[in-house]
Every structure is written in structure tokens, then in C-alpha cells.
Image (tube, rainbow, N blue to C red):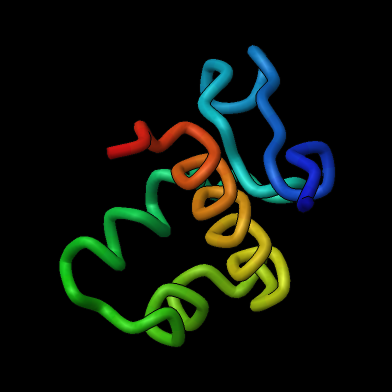
Length: 74
């Protein structure tokens, strides 16, 4: 399982505590907004070069793990 500590950081002094990619000021929500709009991952990475591909994939893996863990059984 991916740990949030390696991917996501929240600090009240950085964007008012908005969860960002570790080592950046790029909100995690921005990645999700790009994908929701139909933009490819490469476009997000081109626009935010401080986020590595590995970080973006790890954030998506973490989201996948969390969504599957909390899914209600049928």
C-alpha cells in the first residue's frame, strides 16, 4: 500500500493546509481536476513539472486503494 506521507503533504503554512504533492505547492485536487476534464496525465505533468510521474501515479494508486477499501459490498 502506498503511504500518504510519501505522496501528500498538508501544512497550514502552505496554501492554507490544502493537501499538496510532497515537495511542491501543487494541490492533489489539481491532478484530479485535469483527469476529470479528460486531460491526459502527460498534460498535467507538462503544466506542473515539479510533480514527478512517480508522485502522480502514487497519488492515483492511493486514491484507488482508498476507494476500493471503502466500497460498500453489494
